[in-house]
Length: 442
Image (cartoon, rainbow, N blue to C red):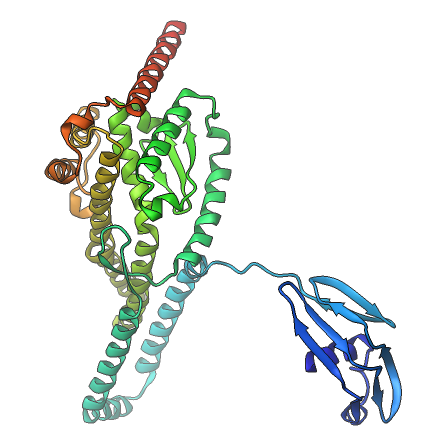
């Protein structure tokens, strides 16, 4: 009722009237009834009502029986008055908002630490000595306050613990699934725009092959709710980059460079199962949550670095060391852990689709040999976000007996596997003929 009166007053331009006149404004016979339906709100007056100031009608008269429906946009006009509700505005996803504010948080910590250092240096020697004595006398109070703050942080983290849907592992999730899916939709749009000119048509044999394998994996694993709830869409990108990834909303991006190093349909199923496992397990939201918590805690250390270091050059060096240590101690080891988990779950997904899981270790052996032949420098595993090819080969070879699919069913004797193998062979033949024609042309 108050909101309705306020809108009526604004429409009648009463805002410019003196305050003592508006104080006397009241409703004569305010007999309104209000009820809500599923899609709208109806206001109905039980009898004629007038808006009056100083006992004189000045605005409008709403007759009985008139019903108005509030919808976005201009809705109703009564004697020159307009009812208007704003159209819904789409807010930025929380993870994206955090990513945009991340540089600002670091800048604020740097400015705060540098200001504290300058303030401390500008203090007279006796004032600094007094403050040291004050801090020493209240050291137990300061320690108790620090402990209380740590307990509150731990309680906050405990309330955001979650269970991984397929493995049952306890993990930290700061962002909800709905919020992160909004960010995934924006990321999908960005990738679609970026690769728009490089997308292979749906009629291409390589696109059809990837689509068939993804749908076969989804069909054989439809008993898993996380698989059946996702609408999988396939996009093959013409690029020599050896890469493939699946976004949380089910968009599969496969690069032709990856298809060239894959030798058969079973290796393709292993690779796609690994990438689909990342999406099913929500690894992107998990990594973003860890990064968010580590960054917030690092702000305290960053402020201390800029407050303690006597010169800006030393503070910059300390900030660089802190950033690298954060990556080496938290981000990269956690990323390798998630990759190993995706290898295990992806192998199980491929096994349920009756792919030859022995192709997994063979694929990573091939990748290691390829890197050696091409002379590509291999980073030590502790510097990388992924396990080394040798360790992935060892892990998958160890997991084969636990994959839950007998070797007799891994020979592709069923109709679906036979069709996929035939498609793969035809694709390889066409790609070979096209390559030979290209070489003969030159």
